[in-house]
Image (cartoon, rainbow, N blue to C red; front, side, top):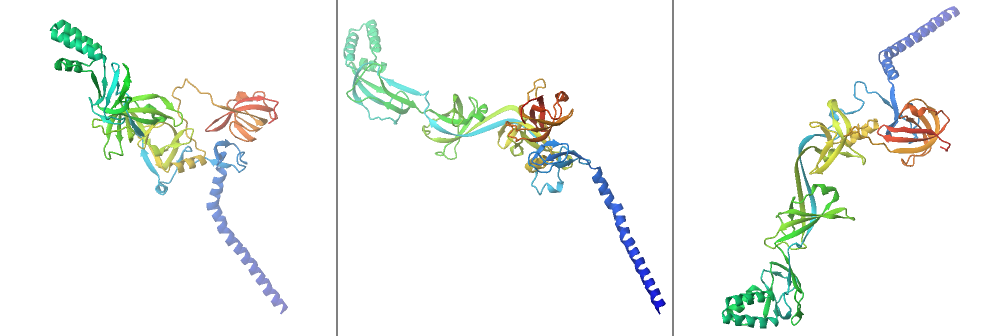
Length: 495
């Protein structure tokens, strides 16, 4: 019995051991197969994938050659890997997602420059159309007609009657010579009356009536507004004294303030259309007559004078108008929608659409803007496509990926502009022919605090005589690729 129990126990133990071993093999075999078929390539790809550089997402323009903490934000640097089979200088978006983010493209086209400036103006008197009424002889005011400043008068309207006592004797002499009948003497007497200040009409009236006419009626010489009337009945006037001032209304001035940024688009003789709230639906056309030389220092505007016809005298000084100044030339330039321009404060960018759903930033030189379009002076070619809506999302993505726009080519290669330099002091930690690692103090001109950074060297000659541990004074230039050491020399200063 005991022998039987022992044999059964041995068989059961062998079966359990065999089952465990078989189960382990069955479980391990699929896992090993899965690892060999799917996991190993992924591990192999990850091992072969090499970072091009590391960067801080908040400062993507500054590149680092090794991982670690960002000197700017105390956060871990992010690796930038090469894109397999793609252009590393562009952002790729799945075409099916462009509609979801509201992306819209526009074509770079060419057209004639045409601009318009909308401003507000106020009507004023035409200071070139003024008549000054004076007394040509001394006398006394006999009568002042019912006139007052502000009255609109027609030409030849009577203003004032003046009694000239001296004319009585001269006119009596003239009538006596007329009765004598000597033509030569009569001509000489007539000339003396003119020199005494008598108008030809009054001399003719004396000669025709045969009576003395010592009263001179002074009239308004032009159609216009009576601005001044400085006479009263009974007062004495002297020869040449100003009695009245009349401003014509056949043409009026519209004074407008044009922003100084639009000054180049304004020229004398340029057409202008004025709309007055007083005359809804009507546009009165005029021309720029004068561009005044002074500038308002408060509003930064220049004064422009527009001359408007006023045949019916409906336009009265003081009325306000909305004015559109149109300007066009025969110059043909490239245009893009103004909404496609990304203004950073230092330069202007656009996102150029390329094949296979790729987009890259490009710097452009912009010209004048009008009617929702902006002229492109440099940086684009006719027929290219730019992003007109959704470009800010693409620009943010490009910044996160460290993609920067290629700067514009200089128009004159022979002319070079020296970059602005920013100076600091520090201690050299590492240095070779291409870069230097410095624990430096703050850059006051950049607003950057002191930290430890690795800077590219502008040229290998800067390394001469410098070794780790040296205290240095150095200057850097800033561009889209980050900070570059332009000057490096030993110093006894503290970092």
